[in-house]
Structure formats: C-alpha cells, structure tokens
Image 1 (cartoon, rainbow, N blue to C red):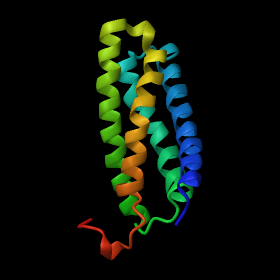
Image 2 (image 1 turned 90 degrees about the vertical axis):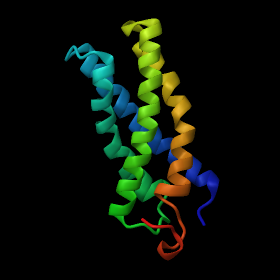
Image 3 (image 1 turned 180 degrees about the vertical axis):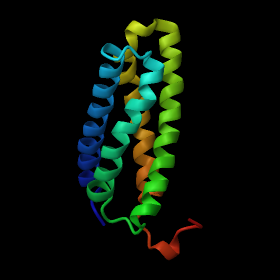
Image 4 (image 1 turned 45 degrees about the vertical axis):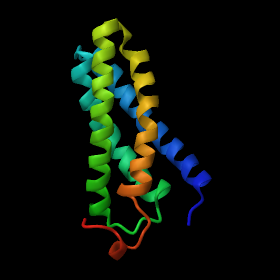
Amino acid sequence: MKSVSAQGIWFTLVGGAAAAMHFLCLVVLVQYAHFLPVLADPLAFLCAFVISFTGHYYLTFSLTRHTWFQALWRWLFSSITGFMINQILFMAGIHWFGNQAYWWLWFIVTLIVTVLSFILGKFWAFNEKAHNETSND
C-alpha cells in the first residue's frame, strides 16, 4: 500500500498544479475576456479537471484497481461535488463582498473543499480495493 504521506505529497503537487491552472484560467477569463467571475469559474474548473484527473490517476492514487474509465467517472463525480460546494461558497462570497474580491475568495473556498476532494478520491474514486471487493460500479 502506498504510504499516506506519499499520497499527501502527490495530492498536494497535483492539486496545486490543477489549482494553478484553475486560477490562471479564472483570471484570464475575468480580466481579459471580461467574463463575470461566477461564469468564468466553471470554465476554469473544466481546464483544471484534466490536470487533476490525469495526475491523481497516474501519481497520487496509482495503486487503484479501477480502470481508467471507472476512475474517470468517479473522479468527475467527486470533482463536480466539490465544485458545487466550491461554487455555492464562491457565489455567496461574491454576493457578500462583490466581484472585486473574487481572487481571495477563490483561494479560501479552494482550501475548504480540498479536504473533501482527498477523502472522496482516496476512499471512493481511486479506491485501492480489488474490483470484486467494491460495491456496484
């Protein structure tokens, strides 16, 4: 079994790369394409998802027994769940503090959702149990 500390390091590195892509896309869409932050954020999420899934599948949770396709759908569900929580908190923050606060709100909300993402990834999306030991896929 891969050690939790190694998984934590990979999760942090891959998540950091995905978060950087998410933030970069968000800023470009808001500052240069003049999207509203709450509309730019879902598009930025999709860009980051590619980095997130690929990195977590091959690095963070490389011992998964799920096929690439099974893990993709599970991680997509996990990521969308996290993103929905993220978006609700982000929109509430924008409502309370205004569009100009989008960048620091994004950081705070991302930190809150990160723990949930790790738990869903480790124990469900990339579960290391043998395929026949898992519940219905």
